[in-house]
Image 1 (cartoon, rainbow, N blue to C red):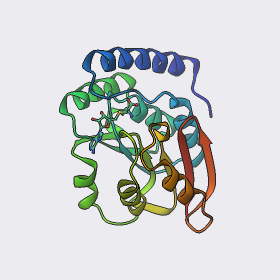
Image 2: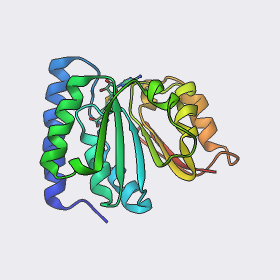
Image 3: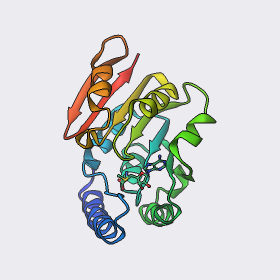
Image 4: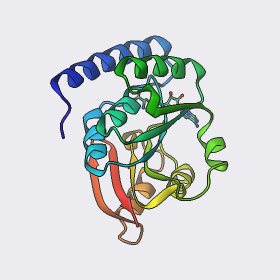
Length: 185
Ligand SMILES: C[S@@+](CC[C@H](N)C(=O)[O-])C[C@H]1O[C@@H](n2cnc3c(N)ncnc32)[C@H](O)[C@@H]1O
């Protein structure tokens, strides 16, 4: 399944609007550029439950929601102001009822979440660290899809990439423009 021409145009517009907000706010909320990749991964695997770490202005959560109408998303961000914008954007795209936006730090949320809760996890906070990555991995079900963005920002890029490349932990490794994904074993 592909984005329709209308959805593609709407997401392109939302990306441009989010970039303007990012440039004005200088708060690190750079919108996720490869939203078509997210759409394709969700359309392919059709996860029931998705956890997103890093809502920003909501572009990626909307792309995830458009990928499969059966998917429900929990999207986390510590910044109240960006969450308000994300909620409004999700309403405009008609996906608001399938996304729960939560104001929290990633670790606070994860500390109160038991193992194997989600069919897909998408990380788009700032540079990924291994400790946080392992917590996100813990709440992902076996057979679930891990997607980790922002490896171009370094963080623990080498350790995370190595882990996701290891047969023991993941299969189906994929990589594109600083984002990697794989299926948890
Ligand atoms: C790159 S932006 C996310 C962009 C978003 N995925 C999109 O497509 O528009 C990263 C977001 O992660 C949030 N963030 C970073 N570290 C966080 C943390 N430890 N806990 C909660 N939110 C965090 C920031 O407030 C920021 O809004």
